[in-house]
Image (cartoon, rainbow, N blue to C red; front, side):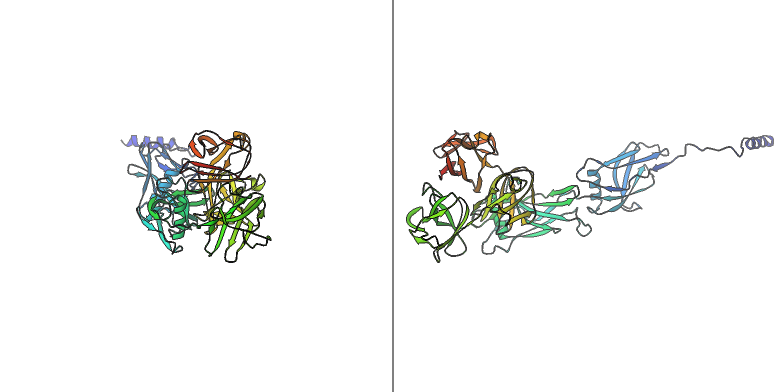
Length: 540
């Protein structure tokens, strides 16, 4: 035995020289590779893109079942399993990783350090560190009002709170992030899926807002609820965050409330405008005046043609006024008043029997309509006395718009979030009803079906330009003036398309009805879709 030991030692000694290297191969290890990038900025615009990819080496466990764990602390006191895999790599999408961060309680847009590791059975890899920024994903949750809430609105307390809207937003903590979030309270007629909506109120970085009687009343009337009648509105919260990747928008579930609005209509006066400048001296109804909050003062918003006018009561010559001397003073049976074509606001003061007239039109201008005025006049609005606002049915283009008076920049309005400001308003191509409320400093741009005039009597059946757009000034009442016709025929159709069109005869409308004959001249048009009637009122 002693000889054998000596030989072995000798062999080992002889086999090793100082120039020989001993290479130890197949070292067993379970190692998560350090990531090339340790900052993960999640972009909501690309939810299916990879958020990250992990890779590891494992010739220790030889497992085919790995779990990837995440934690907000290095000791992994509360680990979150991100997923499992049978390979040595793991990839997670932006949307799935973002939801995992939200479920782990990480606030949106807050730069947070997280730790990841891989687990195979009871064996753990090393830990790698990331810095992440998540984004809000779950929608706001309405707390109040609840479904079925009943509100009776009062014109005696227009500025007082009618309803308080409150919500929660678990993904967004304004105390720990620099991002700004804008909340809009949207309403629409119940059951319409917000196809035609109104912004009732807007707030920034707050979780509640008080809606006044006046604002909720305007929303109800705009939606089509009749004054002094019970109607239902759907309400929801729209949350918008402006980011470098665009607007991140989320919507809460909606609730339905019962609303009884009051009438805000200016009373229709018994007085009207008659003459060659308006209705060919009574060929159809006189132009309406409306009462105001000042006793014995009435106002009208009208489009006139060149000619003469007078003012008379109840569409009758028994009581009429003119202006002898053209000095702004009214005299019973006085002289005709000369007028030139244009849009006007006419005011009569019966306290001192005076009258005044000023050019007045409120229209849409911009790259989204008429190349900022370079491609034609502004889209003229029509006065709606029921909501005391101005409306127009219009086809818009991709671009921006503003509102201005008399096709001139002297008085103009921009807007943001439904409130009139100085900013240009971005719009996308489509058909809309635009409403401007100068009393409440608000506006709305609502996608809508717009009825237009087409025919050989107007635009060569669409070959010579777009249809002439009508405006729904009151529910189911569509108007347009002044329209220039040539001898021919016309029909009415929706959104410049024949899918829905109206014709008729003898003042009665019918779906897909016959062509309507017209002669050359200037016309005022009125459609009543509730009663399926039409008027083609020739002025000149």
